[in-house]
Structure formats: structure tokens, C-alpha cells
Image (tube, rainbow, N blue to C red; front, side):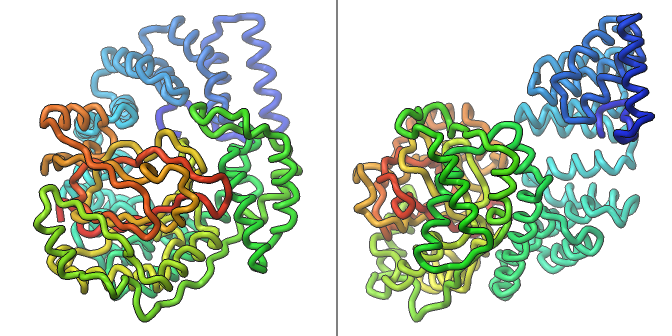
Length: 549
């Protein structure tokens, strides 16, 4: 457990219980017993109860304020509890006593990442590595930051050095794969990810990484689909295991209402279409009972998703359905793009635009629109949950089919001067609840060309003037990093204000696409759709090329 100086590797057995009783008894008799405080505080951290650990470490630090390691541990538990400024203060106090301690420098680096300060974190890990140049964890930490800053060659050097030390470390191999991927060494990336899976066959992250790198190459389309399905299976099996993260989270906090509402709607839709999915009926019965406890008309959308409490038996009844993957086929068709559009003229309009923004109506051929809509309604690929009440599906976790890749190929063929030889680097979709006051925040994408299109019929949109995309006319500076594009909202708005950047709002229309320069800042417009499973707003996004490739 990084950051805690005295991790305890004992299980819950009778001797361990006796030790806890003994330490608690010592504190009862001697409240200032330092070792008992440290033991019990560390035990709380190891058992996932970091909030209860704070008083133990605070008191230990008061008793021995000159102990750098205790101050480091206090900073660590503050960080676990989201008390970031207090953590930073404690780490700095530790460094004043022991200025070159690599453990504390590592913890400061991790905290600086939490504070969206990647450049400062880079310096902290650099200092830690100056003391311990072969520390594999810190080489990987620095490599990860370098990748996020668009410096893959430097990241590769760190991961290569870590590989020399630990060639059988799956995390190191994943980092090598990421660096090779960003350097466009696709075959090397595939080998790295496959090597990592040979060591840890059920690793969810590595399966997603391998599927993602397949997505970016047309000659790997079949592998991308197969590996994406495999990635989805491992993700669902891990997330919704009987002791998995979802079960633990929902047992402690409850089930998010918008997630439950969507999944119940989808299960009923699958039943209406005669699609057999394991434990579907048990899920419907249980989820329906949970939904009956909720007064949906009294929910305040501004207060987040809301939670409903579920008992252990109820959760166990729903887990088999949640962890069962189901994807309907979406076969290739004669045409994916609408052949009646004048694609050469549309290409010229996009290239002549200042800025490069183009709305394309009747984007898909009717049969392709129908196939993609059925795919999105029936496929259980909506795996990622966001606080603003929408769900995400990603190509590296099951959201792919021959039709998805056919669309990319047709775009590149119809508009070659726009897409050139740019690879398809990202493909995803989002599905929203009925009302959304605040969707995806302002950001730009680390790509070259964005394609976004909507597939929900217009009659479900209760406000035809909204529900689309808001884009700003001034592109982000070319030297901005991924963090700048996606997380530094203050810098983005200041930049737009300095340039008096006007915005353009493209309202939602079914089968309307928006093609735009990825460097343009954009965000989801407010939405107000009818309340029903088939009424949910769905947008599909393709990203082509990389900013720094």
C-alpha cells in the first residue's frame, strides 16, 4: 500500500483479533501510546475505513511532530479522504524534516495529479527518481504523466528502464504498450499488451488497451470487434462479481436511480424484442420493486443522480443480469452514409469553413440509421456511469461492429481531403436521461477531426431548439496538453474570453452529424427529451487522428 509506512499483512484471525483488542486496551490505559495509535490507524486504512484512520494519525502527529514518516502517513490518509490541501501541508511538513524522502515525494506527485498539476507532479517524481533512479513504481508514474503531456518518446524511455528491472510486471508492459501506441508503433503495442495478458489474463485495463489499439487500424477491424467483446466480458465479470466494485459500492451507498431506470428500461425492451438474457426476469422484478420506492417526480435534477437503497439479497438477484454481456449484430450494409448527399460539396464546405464546423443532415442511409438505433437500444454496452446522468459505451469495451467500422471507411473514402490517412483513434456513444441541465463539460479533443451524430427520432425531443452541441470558434493553442484540453476549465474559459470567441449552437436533429476541428472547444447543450427508454438522446462520436502524431 504506497504511502503508508507500516502496512500490516495479517488477515482477520484469532491472533489478529487479540492484537486489536490488546492495542485498544493499551489506548484505554495510555491514550498517548504512539505505537497503538499507528497500528490502529493503519489497520483502518487497510480495511478501507480511511475516515476512521484520520484521528489516530492526527494524534500521533501531535505527539511526535518531528517524525517525517508519521507526517507522510497523515498526508496519505488526508488524501484518501479528499482533504487535499491538508494533505499537501502535511507532506510539505514531512519534507522539511526529511527533504529527499522518495516516498513523500511520490505522494506529493500523486496529490499534484489530483490537483490537476501534471507539470508539478512531473518534477516531484523526477526528484524521487534522483534518489531512487530504478524505482519501478515512480518510473511508471512519471511515464504516465509524460504520456498525458504528449511526450511519448520520453515516457517510453522510463517504461523501458522499468522493464529492465521488472520484465514480468503487467503494469510496466501496459505502459510500454501505451507509449508505443502513441508513437504509432502499433505492432509493438499489440505485443506489449499481449505479453501483459499472458501474465494477468483477466486484467480489465489490458483487455481494453488491446481492443483500443486494434480500433485504430483498419486491418485490425475483426480483431477490434472480437477483443472489444472480450474486454466487455472481463469488465462486467469484474465489476458485477459477488464481491466486485459495483456490489461493494452499491451495498454501501445505494444504486444510482438513473442507472437503474435505464437498465430496467433496457431489460423490458429486450423482453419486448424476445432477446433472451440470463436472469432478465429476476432483474426486472427486483429493479421494478426498487423503482417503486422512488418518487421520481420529486427528484431534483440539479442534485445529481439520486440513490435508492438495496438490500444484499436484492443486489445478488440483479448481479447475474448486470454481468451478462449482450450485443446484437449490426452487419455491414450496401451503404452506411446516405448516398444521396453531395459529399464532394460537403467536403469543400467543411474545408472552406472558418472555423471548420459543418452540420450534415440526412447523414446516414435509412437502413444504417435503423441498424445503429437497434444496436444502441438492445446492446448491453452502456458500462460507464457519469455524475450528470448519462451513460457511456466505448469501442474498446464492446461498442463496435462491422457497421461501425464501415462508417469510418466510407467517410474516409467520401471526404479524403478531410480525413486523409488519419486513423480512427476513438469511437464512443453517450445515452442521456430525459432532462439534462448540464452535460459534458467544455473541452476539446486530442484528435484532428471530430464527428458527432444523433440517432434519436425528433418526436422525442421536447425542445427542438436545443439538445445538440455548442461549439466555440477559436481553436485551442497547439502547444496545449491533454490536461489543458480536458481538465483546466478555468484556462479554457479565460482563453475564449481573451479571444472574444463566439459560440455556435447546433440543435439536435435525428440523423444530423456535426463535423468539426477537434481543437475547437465544445460542450453538450441542455436537453429536454420525453421520459421513456426509447426516447433517450443518443449521440455517437468518432475521433480521427492525434494532435501530436
